[in-house]
Image (cartoon, rainbow, N blue to C red; front, side, top):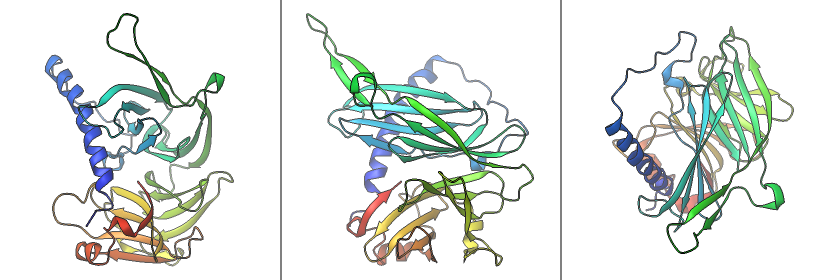
Length: 310
């Protein structure tokens, strides 16, 4: 049976291996240094995003995005690979982009190919979410991203000319006061029904809200307890660190929360799902899926998945 996560895990492992080669070489040449001290006002390390969301573009171009929390920046890693699945043998070239931000970023989410949500904590304690927009073409109508191989006259190794999407807009869509019980953002999950909405998982209250990126309005969806939320999911209070959304045959849209980064190793933990069976953009039920039921009920079968996002 093919796992719904298998293709993602292979891609992630390959990209990590590629980056690890460069890291290992650098480690041999540079003496170790003490870890950077964490400022008292910074978000605690348990909410720093561990994953590196990967977007695949035509032409063998891949982009990963991750937070450099203490450095207050978002890093885009670009990889050009032919054949088009990255590995340590077929990567032709790589680039890195760095975007400085005025806060400690805790989560970065590609909403689609050319839009991002970035969440973080400001020095004065405010929780913020920004919406970033990028252009799909560059000057002259050249597709972005794209890579052109250029071969020197007389032979030799090719050079690679990159055209990357330029950032055209940054909009603040959420700013929560430092005394808010919701606290910093633990995760952002894309809505399967709207490219202008995301689900926000708050670390302090462990509530899940639906944020409209256009109207900048936020609606409570689920909470670990109480009576205010439409859905009560006690397991939201757990230490979740892996999040994704998928549409399933006969089950509608499901938004998943897992307490580990990957289900590839060790016993399968319970996974929480907020289910939107009628696909109206609002989850209406809570599922807690055991490791045994993840397999037995077909959740892991890729054939049952209509639209996966990670």
